[in-house]
Image 1 (cartoon, rainbow, N blue to C red):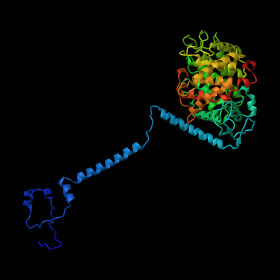
Image 2 (cartoon, rainbow, N blue to C red):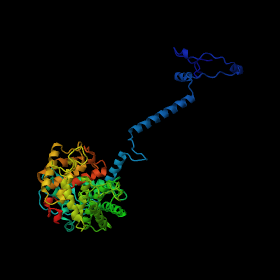
Image 3 (cartoon, rainbow, N blue to C red):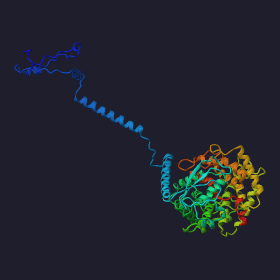
Length: 546
């Protein structure tokens, strides 16, 4: 072999120290046997050190393929895990709804309804009016009023707040001719101008009107397909919701809430029609049916008073309402109160007029229904007598302390819980009862001085509902005292979607765990500034003088 020939390969030289990787000689007898001497030897190919090492450890195409696939699987796993960590967990259970999914649905419905309202508002030309004092102003539909936060017992500073007014019905606005047809008692609720005037006069703020608007928007999204509201005690929840809408003068003719109000009313009417006794409840013998019937009848009574405002037919409203009032009158017991227990007595409804018991809480909703009947102007037999007996009963429940109810605070219906109910009944129904009313207000004021209203400590909204109305009717310094406690608590509890967060009660029966129930009690309290006139501001001193 010519070693100087450039075309001849040179022998591979093993680097120093790598001799140990040289394979041992292997005898190949079969190969040697078949080799032909005259076959020229194959040229030696220079092999890299790394390739020889790969072969030394048994590397081949199969191992390479496995390594590549393993690497790809590892990379895919890293990508998938990273995606799941970054992805927000979806709260969805086909078998039912979680609290988060319900809230998400409610938020979406609220946003949609607000967009619909905004679209309607944009159709109306808007201007801006500044009101600096209690002077009369003309406020056509579609204008924006700016009011300072001032007033008797008012809460807040003096900044100006815009309030959009979007036309007749949408914001609870009625024409002067329509308002003239209403009972004088309702005069403060049916125009934006009147409501804002009443808010300023009575220590409210423009935020109250805004909070009510947000609340009504939230309630709109909670209505059931059958026109009702709520999951249990639907007659009561529907009645309370309708009272909230009517408290802002939203009727079946309202542009934005009209269908909701009409469908809710029809649900109650159909419920009353299908029950032969005229009781407005789904389960007519359940003890809770006494509450439901009182609340539903109260709502239908106010609806009837607003009936003259509208142009829509409200079939069956008067018949069901009158029959409902008649049932309440007939079921009043000898004490002038109302009681349940009809099922145990084998009676067709939950009422038991033969019971010797009495129930101030149940009676509260019955006398509010009777009040609505009186203001409706309908001639209902026995109405005046039932109201008179109820007033006598309420006065009999006053204790020497001035409260109304049981004197043992550990008992269920005690004077710390129900004095507001007793006082309100005498304020709105009775004649010449100033002394017991003042004693009741004094009792409540002393109680709330020692235990101020606190959403996180004593949020007994059922009690607050009556306290708020009783103090409002008392007016003057008593109302200033109460308003300073109550208003920040309610406004501070409203959430971004218009709903109200749940508070912490210290009396279980005063709790409002149900979201619809809580929403209505809060809304009705915020409407107190304009929903009814104070007794002192009315043309009559009591309903007996009508």
